[in-house]
Length: 442
Image (tube, rainbow, N blue to C red):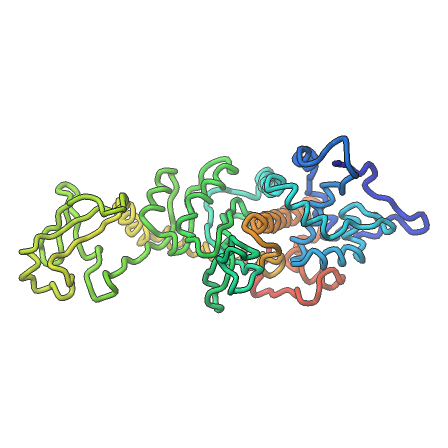
């Protein structure tokens, strides 16, 4: 049976009120000022029986516990509840007095199954809406990228029918080779590094193929389409350029280099000249390649083939093809790719691209250094999605808190030394010491 705590806090009469023990500039007090969870009860109402059964743990308390986990980066629920047991600020934040028994750690795991994704998506969406209402989102330039997250599973269990994490797949991890994990595909606004969109896939999923979807998700939360989307070379294809053009968005992503057939010293498509009126290509030796239809099983590829007699006596055949005649399989987005190549030579393109890494890579570093994004807390893609949503929401709330500090005349550099103050007040374990070379200032 769903219940709601009528009295948010109960205090021991022999001790000062818990409210008076929490400093005014404490991180959780600042978070509480910008946090609105009034929607939670209505959001999960259908998940509870309203007139039968045992009284439940207040759903808002559960969400607050999850936010503490995302804020501190504690990876294990048992560890989280041990910290809440002894930490006055954590107890105050969830509304529990010193004499009250805390929820069992299993309550949080069961809540994930009960709540589904909707309530966590709403927490994330509201963090974006609050940032937007506060002027923290400009919406002119967005940055897109993906980062890998190590799954909580042994390497030899990946992809097996009896795997404890059936969704995890092998992916490339910088400096570690391949390992089982997930990818978080992320969109960040350029102005204050607010996360405006994300999705989670198995680690073997191409970031190139997720770009349009995650950008479209971000667009639903913005007032207007951005002028540009910046991404690394993995996204620089004709297909993505065409998709962004359809949305009146400039794709700022270095174009992918064409691959040489069979890895040999052969001419690439860039060595051939296209005649749009004749719909044919001309090879470096001057012979034409005519359109003959789409490639088998690939409706997005067009085939152009040279005549056998033109190739038979060609002096360049040894660096063109081993076959009797040369053929090209050309993407239907070839024209968009060439526009991307031309745009990549402009100064404005280069300036925008240089702004990409400090913004998006800085957000990833922040999430992994402070908030536990290096490794999955739980197993399964859906639970990995919840983890990412909570961490992204916390990062956005930090942006709001920094702004709120300015409004209230507080010391704004607080969050630039966020981890140091928390560690100094014994709120963070020593293993989470700040690395100022990794975590950018807010």
